[in-house]
Length: 151
Image 1 (cartoon, rainbow, N blue to C red):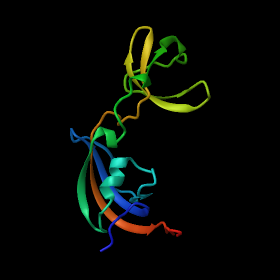
Image 2 (cartoon, rainbow, N blue to C red):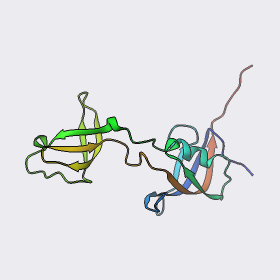
Image 3 (cartoon, rainbow, N blue to C red):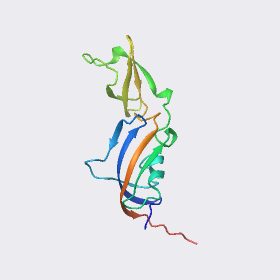
């Protein structure tokens, strides 16, 4: 029976949750996720988790922070002057916003705290600092990259 290896393109159904049981993402009701194993399209722990699976196999994997989205980076916590918010906008904890940096790049942030004169924004990935659990089902091995080794 063929097993997944690096370079294979696979289709996987998944259910992702935090260690407290909260679901953060799932392919339920959607097409399975298709990606190239080892191609940098998913987090390392997910790549490692599907490697060696056979079509139809189901398993649960635990992905520690370092193989997921990494620890929270304190440099990604930004104090933003409250008076620079658009007029009529009331910042609230948990609100998701997009900011532009000096180079004009847009990046998502979440309001972590609202103070009298500043709003604390968190630009870390929403799953940074979290250990993740995935229930996986390998649906299909679509194909693999051909590798020709020259002498």
